[in-house]
Amino acid sequence: MIPQDHPRYRSLVVRERLAEAARDGVVSLEGLTSHGRGEAFDYLIGEVTMPSARTAERTAAAMIRAARHPVISVNGNTAALAADEIAALQQASHAQVEVNLFHRTEERMKKITALLLEHDVDVLTGTAERLIPLSHDRAWSLNEGIGSADLVLVPLEDGDRCEALIAMGKQVITVDLNPLSRTARTATLTIVDEVTRALPAVTAALSDLTDDEAAGLIRHLDNHYLLQTAISEIATRLIHALD
Ligand code: PTJ
Picture: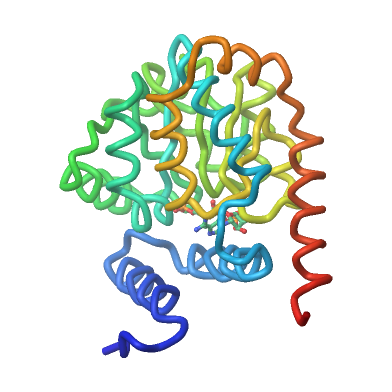
C-alpha cells in the first residue's frame, strides 16, 4: 500500500498500475523500461505541460479535425495508462481506434482490446494484414484502420514504425516525452508531454478551436521548431532547478 502523503505518490501509483498490467500481460516487460525512460524525461520537464506542448496539442486537434480518416493506434502502455482518455478523444472526434503492437501476440491483442472495450472505446477488429512496410510483426494492421488512414496518432511509438507510416504517405502525430527520440524527430507532429496530460488536452482543444485558429496552426506547423522549443524549455528549467 502506497502512503498517500508520499511526495511521489502519483508516480508510485502509476508504476504500480503498470506493474500490474505487465503481470496481466497487457504491458510488455519492455514496456516497463519504456515507462522508466518516459518518467525520467517527465522529471526533467517538471511533470507539467510545457508551452510548446500546448501548441502541439492544439495543432493535433486541428489536424485530427481536418483529417479524412484519422486512426488512434494503441499499444500496451497507452492502453494501461490512458484507456479513459482514449475513449474521450474518440468521442470528441471521428477517429477510429486500432490496437497495434510491437511485441505482438494474439493473447495480448485480445487482452488489450478487452481492456479498451471495458473503458467504452469502440475498437476496430478484423483480419490483420502485413500492410506497413516493416519486416517485423509491427507490419500487421487492418486495411479499414491504419491501412486506409490519412492520419495516425501513435502515442509512445518506436522510430521504425513512425518512419514506415510516413513512408506510406500518412500524417503521423506522436506523443513522446523524449524530444530527442527518432520517433519525435520523424513524426509530422510530436507532442512532448505525458500521455495522460496530452490526450485530454487534444480532446479539450477539439471543442474550443475556431476554424481560423485551426487553419493557422496547420499552416504554421513546424515540428523541428516545436522540438527545438521543447528542448529550450527543458534546458531553461534545468539551469534554474537548484535556484
Ligand atoms: O505494447 P507494445 O508491444 O506495442 O510495446 C510498446 C513499447 C512502448 C514497448 C514500444 O512501442 C517501445 O519500445 O517504445 P520505445 O521505443 O521505448 O518508445 C517509447 C517512447 O515513449 C520513449 O521515448 C519514452 O520516453 C516515451 N514515453 C514513455 N512513457 C510515456 C512516454 N511518452 C509520453 N507519456 C508516457 N507516459
